[in-house]
Length: 171
Image (cartoon, rainbow, N blue to C red):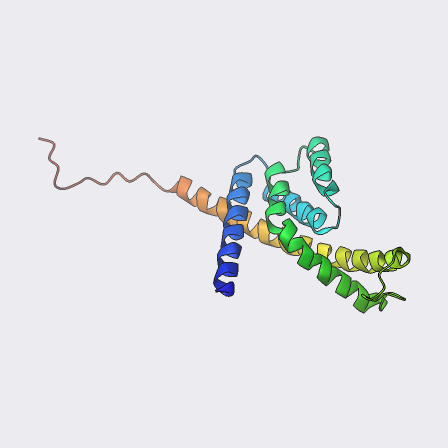
């Protein structure tokens, strides 16, 4: 039951991303611009910005005409608030693996004094994961954009169907 629910949710997310990317494909942006916009969006969304990332999207969209706004905002569908908690957990674990456990950190005695050590591990792990997500997102988006445009170009170049129905007579 759980796996079916998870599978349906992932399919719904995939379809939402695909719909938004398809909309981005028909914009007047190059495939690299669409993929880079999506990649930047994934990177920013993966970071623990507490909502400031969305403001960064608006600033980027206002400052740079080559940014695909739709592709940028499509990244939010993938790293939605529910998924981000898993990213944060993985980020902290990666940071702890790389930097070692935070000194004096335990679940029994949580205090503000260990905040810097915990946040350092979270950010180190998160920057690494966000970079990986962005690279994978760029490659995936570029592939999808190029495939979509190739298909639409192939459809546009097909000769019109001018076959004659033998059952009709023109007498």
